[in-house]
Amino acid sequence: MTWLEPASVADAGAYLARLVRLDAAALVRLRPAGAGALALWARLPFEVLVTRGVRADLTDDATVRAADLLRALDAGSGRLPPRHDAQWRWPLPPGAGRVVERLPAGEVHRVGAAAETTLREAVASGVRGRAVGERVLRDALLDHVPVVVLTEDGTRVDVPQRLVQAVVRMGFLGPSPAGGEVEVRVAGGWIGLAGAFGAGWHRSSRGFEVRPA
Image (cartoon, rainbow, N blue to C red; front, side, top):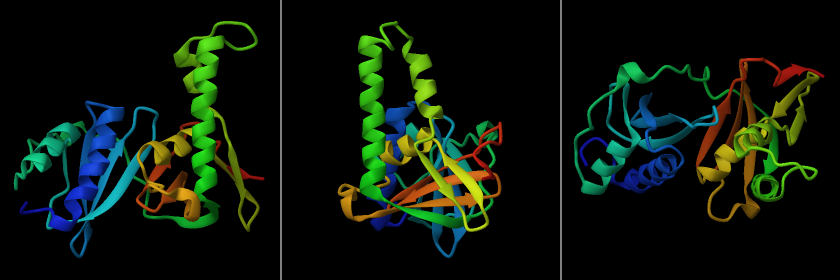
């Protein structure tokens, strides 16, 4: 592997494998972050950008298919797969932002797992005895706000379930989240959840997630 440092191959592979399970056609953007650092970016189907840092010798900002890159890593190829730069259409947060709260990673994991259980039960049994489509239920669940943070200047930050699901399902909390922390970050109109192994970012088109309390 000529462009990705050997110590980062497993980290990149874990990120890509989880991403492909969530979206087989996902794109991944490789964005140089200076001094041998590289940020992997992708957009999940539920409108969250997820990122993980690795060590790499890459100077170009490039977009490729996640499945192609995963196959290249598995094969030990030193080349990037075909580029699809023009297909990346999503803005990125303006930097890492500022931390406005720290949450126990175990609690974030619990909230995410409880939401998945609720969805399964609602799909199987309906809501108040009425059948509801899985897509409708999933959208409502992702829009639900399980975490609300008040910043020092009185700004209310609503953290939607879609962000919780992103960091849980991408494995960003780590294999044993009980002792870790998750940072709630804000950057412009973006809200982020940053765990030990990566971060998820969301910017609502409605602009309701960051607002005065």
